Amino acid sequence: MIKIAVISDVHGEERQFKRLAQELEEKQPDLIIDNGDFFYGSPEAFYYEMMKKRPPILDLAKELISVAVPGNHEFTNSYRTFKTAQNDMPYEWICANVSGFTPYVVKHIKGIKLVIIGLTTPLIREWDETGELSHLDIRNPVDALKKWIPSILASESPDLLIVSYHGGFERDPDSDWPFHGAESENEALRIAHAFPDIDLLITGHQHLRMNTEVNGVHIIQPGSHAIGYTEVMIDTETASNQFASAFRTIENNLNEPTEADEWLDTVIAEWPQDTRFSGMLSSRLHRHPFHDLMHEAFQLATGAQLTVFEMPYLENGGFFGSITRRDVLRHTPHAAPLQIIELTASQVKTLLEESAAVFTVHPKTGVPCFLSEIRELAPAPYVHDVWGGIDYTVDITRPVSKRITQLQIGGRDVFGDERFEVAISRYRLTGYDFPLYTTAQVVRSTNRTIPEILLDFIAQTTLDTPFGQQAQQPHRSELQGDS
Image 1 (spheres, rainbow, N blue to C red):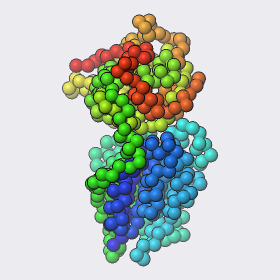
Image 2: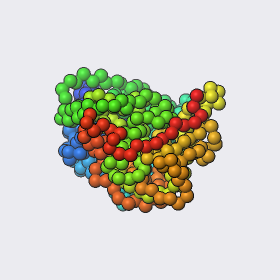
Image 3: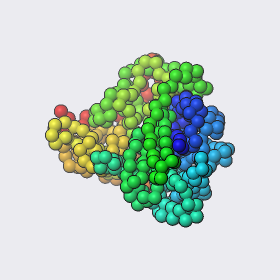
């Protein structure tokens, strides 16, 4: 019996991974595979990057992991940390569809020869904000497998062929409902149907727990944030090397704070106004004090007339009372600077229309909802931005692209070629969700990242200088079509 432990999308969760590492050290699996997005995406990871310190999670991984695949965040958000780890770690980083990596590794375990091929989502090119990846040859995973699988089967003759792919499912394998994302972002089902010689296909990126079989290929996805792992048991005594897998949840009973915890859990402000929100739909449908807060923070940092931000992907959030750095960072996990661009009024209206396309009125209940709840391949809720400094009304009962019924600044209609400076996250300028941004002229950028800007804004706002008195208030109207 061969035991394999698979993790994915740890995202720098130091304390949780420490507990997971203890569990795996006790269980002693024959092989531990990390399927990508190991470093970046948590407040802990932000702390070590900001302080330019080596994350302790690397030392835990060094003694534990057998082989790793780079995820999109390794490339696009923590490339320097990743390159350091790649040179420092004793295990191999494999990726058959990106140049500069070993495409696969061979492992001999209990007399069984395993070949593990690594892959990552090719959209790292589209998500590259800095141009650091311009030297890499990035290919589609299916094309890479067409090249490598026949070669491996002929030259290696493996007993077991494993593909570790930092990408997910394009459709739910049970209901056939399509998941969000570009066509090439997630291709697990296409891979399984195209390559029946694969024995085990490991997926990730979507933070799901999946355990299924497609076209004779055993497919798993082991969740995220180190809350557990998928244990794969391979019965090598049978002629077909029978697979059994299950997700193992890890209870975190570690009370000792980490270095990052002490910094993150320090109270930096007593927030005077209630900006808490509840519900991803309602916090986007209606004007909310949290929108005012974000606009004010961005405007003070940039001097831009208009501001754009994506609401946190949280059911419950906002600030009131004692606020820690961790509270702030859970709302702004992506450490990108603000960039100030120039847009015309007509371009602003086009972008507002694209944001408004995520909403609809449910045909059965007559109440507002996200379009993705009732239509396949509709824009996801995160393809929506809130604008500050401008008064706009959206009628979600109207057809898509004809929903903006009012666009004003200070009671004055704006239209045509009138130009504005707009503060926006550097990520949005990749054009992945809003292609129009790729043509925008960048006027200047902030030295601080968005998390640093918001941390400073929260810490410097006091009862003597309450927010709402430091910058021009936005005038976002309620959306029409509500009931």
